[in-house]
Image 1 (cartoon, rainbow, N blue to C red):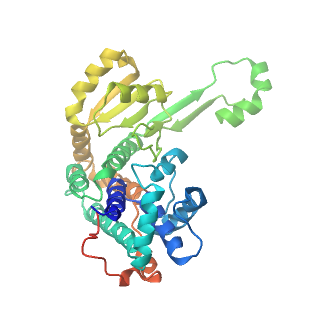
Image 2 (tube, rainbow, N blue to C red; image 1 turned 135 degrees about the vertical axis):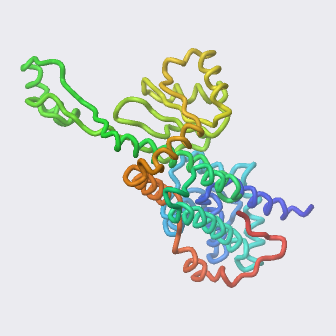
Length: 355
């Protein structure tokens, strides 16, 4: 097999493994673009473009998908490791790209365009669904069956959980009371500035009532171990669509300082999680284990005739808003493609656009 095929296979693997935003493939495309259009670049010299290429990537990703990569530097740098796109393979891609007048760049951005088209299909389902027709099972199935979106199904779960929990908590008008129990006037006076700046209350008015609220972190790391949601009333919330191992459970419980944790998981995982928690002695930290079946039942209740006029409509608005914030629906991709004339490039027959 010709060596050049290894570089193509590496690029295809990078695209397949990427989430919707295609940060790493975009970084590769921008390196290839500079190498093709500017003199003096040696793609075997990693340090000459390692950090600079992150800035190129961010400029383009902000334009096309509305955000930049927030992953750790270590995770960002592993794009150049042996099992991804090392300089030797990148240099070979550079030669292929130059000879082909930019068709490798076009291949990457046409793959991104296809991903964004898949996002628009799901977005259309969310926006067009009425309270009677909306189904979280159908929505999740769309993600699971669409190749370009499958790797981002965890984000869809997070959105559905957050929208549901936040909507119900608001509808319940749940409140949190913060009160200073120590009535010693001397300590209240001495720490008056602290009380106001840190606790947000007045030393003279030592009781505060605020609405209960949930907050979505929005970004978890590549290993799916980050904090998904937190609340101002106690528990942290973890949404897991992967099988939980002892090691992953340790990462969850050790990495979150909240006294209580709520886990949302697949129906088939609940029994295994309960058993695992008992084995490692963490049952007391888990406030509740919620399954996809529970979510489906609560969605159906919120969207039923009884509640759809208020709670249901607000829930669908929350899903739409969170989906729009998480997943790009770029209007800039076509002008960008035209500006670089990628839309005029016909790809070789063996370079199939990837979802």
